[in-house]
Amino acid sequence: MSKNINRVHIIGIGGCASSAIAEYLSSNGVAVSGSEMKKREDLDYLKEKGIEIFFGHSADNIKNTDLPDAVLFSPAVMALNPDNPELTAARENGIPLYSWEEFIGEYLSAKGISGITVSGSEGKGTTAGILTMILKDTKFDPLSILGAKIKKIGGADTNVYMGKGGSYILEGDEYNRNFHHYHPDINVMINFEYEHPETYKDFTAYKESFKTFFDGMKGVKTLILRATKNIIDFVEEYEIYKTHKIIFFGDDQFDTGRIKYTKEFYVTQNPEIKPHGVSFDLIKLTADKKTLIGNFSIPTLPGYIVNNAAGAVIAALELGLSADVIKTNIANFTGMVRRFDVFKTAKSGVFITDYGHSPESLSHICREIRQIYKDKKLHFVFQPHLFSRTFNFYKGFIEALSGADKVSMIDIYPARERAADWDGKVSSSDMAHDLGENGINSAYCGAAAQICENLKPRIDESEVTCFIGAGDMDRYYGKLFSDFGAVPFF
Image (cartoon, rainbow, N blue to C red; front, side):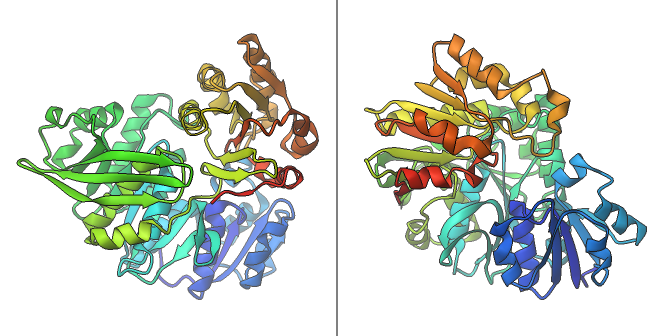
């Protein structure tokens, strides 16, 4: 890729990462334009930054402007229509085409910027968000491009933070092997379960893709890994310890005796979960002693955020940041939008929004809510993300959702898939029926756009209502929140 990129066009500019890249490039003097299928007022902030946005896909979106040096696309665009007219126009005019992951990976590498990624099946956005807040305004002040918005960073909720240091933070997204385009110096991994069956036929293929990603790292190739069984087994199966610096961390049940190939261990102890946040001690273990690194407090929930925070803290320590600075900065982290985002209603009810979209994440959220709100029943409002994921992990979803007292199902969000291809194979109404067969108070509540009218009668403010899923229902439940007087808890 040429270092002289002066004009870029982004197809699907409204995506979380695509919009972040648009903002970053624009702030660095690159002329940016982009397109979205339908008009969206939530993209006005990009227009205010001088970014031209076209609604509806057309070859004219490229031809009506000076031809760009590169055309970027989100994965959903290519999956839904590889003959998208803007893709075709780029090909006909000899304009280089890149997925946004490919572009940003090459763009940052060409600039010689060192980086940190967070990979794994869950916990990427939150861990990357915490690390961004820790490094903010330090000599490592990063460029962070994330798939979720960090709350109140630089005075606003945003998924892009443009620091002035020489580092970057990215989520290592394994879908479509996108993370193979990234070459970080440090990688953090919190969870490791088989995911994205639309890309990987089985867990073996999934693991092999991570091995390829790790092999493509640069420098010392430092891996900061939570000591789960799957992660430890993976490191040993592929002998990753022979080529990488491995740092493991876990809670005080972590059996370090099993691991012979590294002496770098951290342990979290004395976790405290209170309504206004979480605190924990971080201990470094060496051959002959235990060293208290510090007590760290985060003004947000849930309890498992200790794992995300520990991974971020260790990454900052590896960079050379002091524990005192980390302790001060991490206290400024107030959460990620739609990552266990807690609201209180006018009548002291509790609403939670979360991006969880796998059976494991639903189970984790269920356990956390039960622990924090012991005296309340749990109502899950679930919008599955992707037909393929719902189909392949159907039994797991039913089992996880059965942990709630009440479930309201919203239509599956297709994302990059075609709903018509899945007719008769899997649906949210099927899930509501099967949950009912399990004795769960369940109902099918239709499309996300109907959420206010269909869901309102089912909400009981004496319960915790958790709106969970990686789809688009957040675009529609605003009126529902307003009707109940819901405001952020933190």
